[in-house]
Every structure is written in C-alpha cells, then in structure tokens.
Amino acid sequence: MPVLVTKWFGAFLVDEKTGRILDKRLMPADPALAAEKLAEIQRGSLLPEERELASKAEKVSVSDRRQSELGRTVLYDSSFITPEKFGFTAETMHEVMVRLGRLRTSEPLPRDKSLVQAVRSLDDLIETANLLSERLHEWYGMHFPELADMARDRRYAELIADFGDRGRVTEALGAEIESMGADFGREDMEAVSRLAGLLRRVHEDLDRTEEYTSGIVAESCPNMISLVDGPLAARLISLAGGLERLASLPSSTVQLLGAEKAMFRHLRSGKKPPKHGVIYQHPAVHRAPYWQRGAVARALAGKLLTAAKLDAFGGEFMGDALRESFEARVAEIKSKRPDPPKRAQKKQGGGRRGGKRGGRGPRS
Image (tube, rainbow, N blue to C red; front, side, top):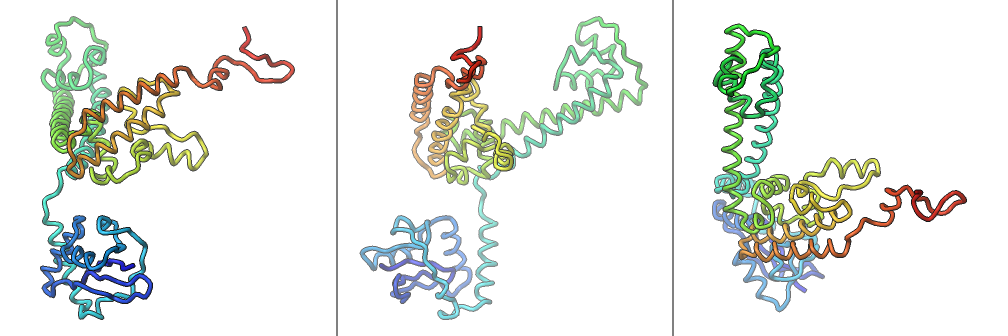
C-alpha cells in the first residue's frame, strides 16, 4: 500500500514495501512560497498537493496524524528521501526556515495564549498581595493592632492608605477604641501609608485581571463555562498550556491538573495517588463524600475534555447537554454509592476481623 510522506521540500507517494517513489509534488523554489506551505502544515491543514497525491491510489497510509483523514496513520522510516536528490540545498533549507520563523511569529496569537499569561499574572499578583498584606499587618500593627479585628484584606489597606493615623481610622469606622499600640512619627506614618496604597493598587489590578480573564473565557470557551465557572476554566487552560493543548490531553490528566506534586510524591514514595487536581474547586466535587469524590471528579474531567474539544476546534454549542449529562452521572454515583466502603466503616468503628480476641463488630 502506498504511503504519503511530507517533507519540508515536498510531498511524496511511496511504495511501503519497496521504498520506490511513485509520485511527488515538490515545494516551490521560492523560499517565501515554500515557507507559506510549511506554515499551513504547522497549523494542521492539509495541502492541495497532499490531497492530489492521496487520490492517485484507492487506499493510502499516511505518516503524519495531521493527514489522518486521508488514510491510516503508520510509522514509516522515510529518511532515505533527502532534499539533495531533488535539488534542494542546505542553504535553501536555511532560507526557508528563517522565513517560516518570521511568518509564524508575526501571526496573531489565539486568545487562549493570552489567557495563560493572564492567569499566571493573576497568581503573581495574589502572591504579591499576600506578601504586602503580611508586611502591612506587622508594621501597622505596632501602631494600631486592633484594626486587624475590624477590617480585613483590601479594606484594611484602604483605611490605612486613606486615613493613616489610628484616630482618623477609628473615626472613619465610627468606633471608640483604646488602642494598645505605639505612636508613629509623621515620616513613619507616611511610609506605612505608602505601603498600604501600593497594596490597594495591587488589589485593583487583581480585580481588573480577573475581569479580563473572565471575558476571554466567556468568549473562547462557552462549552467549558457551562460546566465550570470562568476562573476555574481559565485555571485549567493555564495549567494545560492552552486550550488546544487541554483538548489533546486524556481525561485522566485533566482530572489531575494542579495535583502534579501529589502525583510525583505518589510515584516516589508509594503514597496514595491524588483523585483530583484543581477541579476540586467545583462544588459537585468538593461537596461529594470522600468515597464518591474520585468518581465525580472523573466524570467532570470527561465532560470538560469534551467541552474543551468543542471550544478548541470550533464545534457547536453543547454546554447545556454536557451539564445535564454530568448532573445525571453525579446522581447515578450517589445512588450507587450511598454509603462508605465496608472497609472504611470497620476502620472508623474500630472493629477487628478474626483472632481470639476479635469480634465481628465494633466494641460497645
């Protein structure tokens, strides 16, 4: 059976047994045109030349999964097809690859690539906010430690940035408190107020970045956000490295995204493997009893993978059907596994099996 093989310098129809080239379509001699052809290949498209060669035989095998619609994919060693045999030199290859690199880097990026960077930026902002908040509490706590019981997080920083001195802060809160803190000098108060202002700006950037990521997810992933909320969908896409990358993963990997450390610990030390990663944030997963949680996470991962494929490759909207199917599966899991496993029940009850002193049930 002929095999369709595509190289940077052309497409070839090769006899699988003898290695004889039955037909060929070479790339254009112009490096710019050849680079455009290769860019189409990298985007996952089929070239007209490939379709033409495939039509030359009733059945063909292909050497690239990208060509799978033309025939069965096989592993084929085509190293004997070299560019020098067809008039292509190393200098030609260099020029074509340089032009290909320039062409691909100038292409507009898919929005999910920006989403990956936005989620990572969000993580950096959260870490920065936590560090600044800890420093602000320690510093301002020397002046007004009681404020930590009256305001938290962003509100804590806003009060200090806007009012500074504890007298003005308590007045803004409408409270009368006799503080145990020490007095601050003017320069000390200005310094701690600047830190509070910085923390407030970080919180404002956090809000804007969250709105930005939610907007991208709502636009790019309508099927996914039918199953999970925007922040969780964005987190999954970021952990996978992009929407298409997420769509290419097996559902078992989607289930464990975010639990890589626990998985490595399991592989290294033999401890129990994790049952879920960040999808634990979904209410159906974290509210499920421990003996149902793994099955619920597995069901959610499968539906999410289907949704990601639909969103990544332009499929129709099936979010409502996927959500209903997932909810039905959760109800089935609950009905089939209403009680914890017997082994867990015996362990919790303190019963012992067999032995002279052991009874059949837990001691009263």
